[in-house]
Picture 1: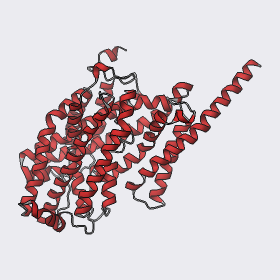
Picture 2 (picture 1 turned 180 degrees about the horizontal axis):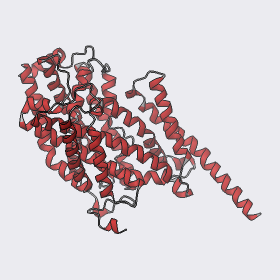
Picture 3 (picture 1 turned 45 degrees about the vertical axis):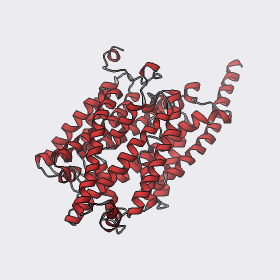
Picture 4 (picture 1 turned 60 degrees about the vertical axis):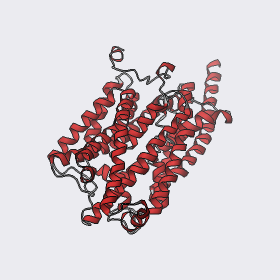
Length: 472
């Protein structure tokens, strides 16, 4: 308890957020713009070009996919967040029980660490331009220089310190950095087009089809992308946050559920404009030197905007990694509730820094975020069904809390069976990983209702049998 009193901030990890701590719309606009106008956009945009996508498929796919993502935050995640006002982890503990949620929190925290690590990688590429040392290529998995290791660790530690001071500090940092970063990303696209010779918007679409998103064969080792790949990627690259319900932790601070429209600031500025701008820079790089297939945000930004570009990439990596490490810290703190969230987040940041040393995560970012969303998606369906539907079937919601069970087998089997089905569709059915999570969510929802009906009835029968035995 002493450790809790000495913690710099109170994040209400195991209680409702009080009205006095609620935040306005501006905080969420800044946080989502800062988080999604990020250094990783300079990784994802080029990977679209490397995947051989066409201009129509990437532009229209991003418009539709990002709209679906915003609607998922508004109608699936935020209404539960503003009613329960609990972290994802504490709410799951009430549903799933302590032992099951520990498994989930471990998986969630580790995946968040890897994701934050890719953002550390991005910032390190900008520092690499500054100090001029060898950086990883598109195919590299392991670090290729001592300088890379040192810089990645230093950047990761600095990010962890900011994240450890809580959501309010994360939001403030994002609010300060986001407007400037948006302008720099816009400049990336404009400068890239001018260097290609496109000085008027009337020539943009022709040039886009000719040299940027040509719709040809992907680069070696990359998957060919169509409209459907782009749409589902834009929708599901943050699946863990909206459909997977991770952002219950964020929107529990929102005064109104409609504040989730703030996610649009991230989707259409970051996951539309910034991705397209980054694509343009990479296409320009390939046009100038077809043998240079490296996807390095730092050099891309430096060639476009010089020192301003380097600073933007460093800051962009920070604003994305900060809330990611914050979320990971809450996941691990839920496993070790006697430890302060401040200390756990610092340790989590160190793990993310170590992950950032390995560039393979960032270089395979499209596939990684699809895998990440798929792993955490079933529990999002469990939360949705438990909160809105279970009582309509005459069943108990928050069953672990009600029954005192530490492992809700209905939720556990839903998670394991859904993942098994999705993995089977990918490996046996040869369905791209980007496409399996949508049907997987409905599979999980149906499974949870059926298994809860059986499990809760079984537990009730056992209890009645125990009472009969005791009375006898």
